[in-house]
Image 1 (tube, rainbow over the protein chains, first blue to last red):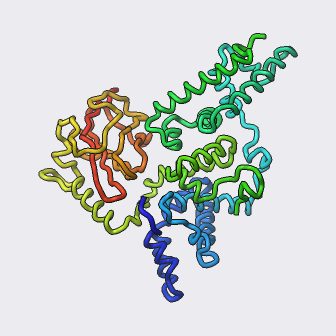
Image 2 (cartoon, chains in turn cyan, yellow):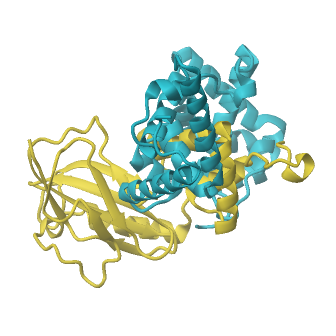
Image 3 (cartoon, one colour):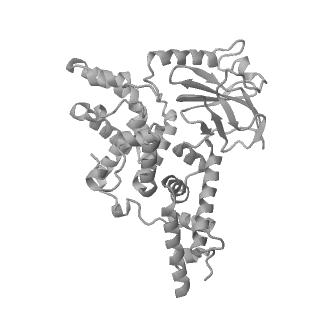
Length: 221
Length: 202
């Protein structure tokens, strides 16, 4: 990737006081649509979007462009990608200032989610044959079935932790976050969605092996 | 400023620069593995990567050039590429040149972009269509052009990835289409794939 700051950014950060306003206007003109794109992604009506957009610009300009000066032009990331990250984080800051932190902050900010529970059941279904969803959900009526469900969940969690980090990330993106294979391929830099499917199948086979080794082949006691 | 691993003893959340580098594929293998390990166990950071990746992938819809800062040498190469794609030899403005409408399906030795899917002459459903290709050596940005049988562009997409999915809002009618991928490398080189034919079924 080409190194060095973008020319408009370089001009902004090296300009004198007399040309500061003009340089800032030129910089904003170049990035405004990208920043609006990020601001819109947080939802809300037009006023909410413009509030976020204005906040982003205010924070980028603050303290003699302190945040913009933090961009390292070492070629590892495009300036636009870095700006998207910064702008999104500023949107979250703006949201926290106005509405406070999310209630379930202790749960990594993501509280109980029926969809995630369903996704975990899907993972368990794929790994262990003939799994009764009620057992995974813990709604079993009989104590031994409930114990069995707990054992299965614990064994699955342990087996997941034994996987390589990249494999664990792949399964999390697919079953916890519900991403499509094409999107996973883009994030993990895999050539095609088919590479994603193949790796998922490989990891599911690995999980099955590990569960069988600890005596879990199905949900029937 | 986010705490470092050394200060807290737990894996630190990626900085903005590190996360952007991860999304753009610019981290070393070792650093990328470290970040992947963190993402596997951190819902917040994983959510951030997902959302940033989506924003970057859809940023072309915001009509903000992602590489508006391309240096002089690369800018010249972009101009050359634009002329090759847009200048018709004997066709109306906005239509693909005759060379792009050729039925030639074989890649020449000068073409570094190799189409993976859809396969040449493939039949496909129009919705959710995924275009996949292999780029040449080096970092590059790609532009996919999809045209109808008459050569009029139907959809274009720019990406640094090697796959794109046809958006839901682009509806392809039943019939034949032509498509190709043009590459612009960081060192100013350009390359192109052979023109591919695609048939959309009902």
